[in-house]
Length: 273
Image (cartoon, rainbow, N blue to C red; front, side, top):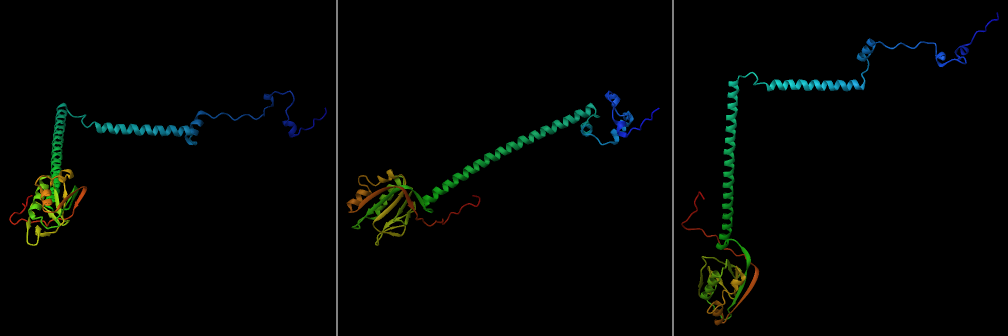
């Protein structure tokens, strides 16, 4: 018989023509599938997957929530073991405490309202007192003043205007609503002012007045302007004595002179005021 030449490795691995893919598959057998025990062991000791991690976190959260709910239920069950009579006493105690709290709220609310009313009354009284103080200070001449009014200038070239004529002018201006008066920018006229005729001339509160006599008056300008102009009034008398009277209405008259704050000889303020 003729001898067969030995096949080389390449020739052994070369598939024969006409063979099917199943016949051309390697001769080695595929590895067997792992058993169920091996799969369980691999799941415990192998690296966990993402799905396993998510499931573990959800289980931990559910367990924590369940434990918290149990603890809350245990704390809320403080009255579970009480008898009906005990529960009634507890309920009565809570009702009494609630009533006392409501009564205290009503008392405090009423006190708050009283304090508000008292505070409002006190504030209103203080505001009125401040306004009265300002008015009295202006009338007393202890503070400067400003406002609408008139400026009256009385000339006396012949020196025939006397104290009585100026006193009549002051009285007529007061009757017309004059609030503040000042002579010659330096002598403030107040309720206690005194005017007199002396050998040196006319004195107002011991201060000598010199012509022309300039009277600054704060009040309603239109009313004050006509206060001296009437038959036998100060304007007519001055003109008969050779003088003149001019009146200028002003939107703002400034009176800067003040009188010294007088102190009573007998009266003293009360300590509790």
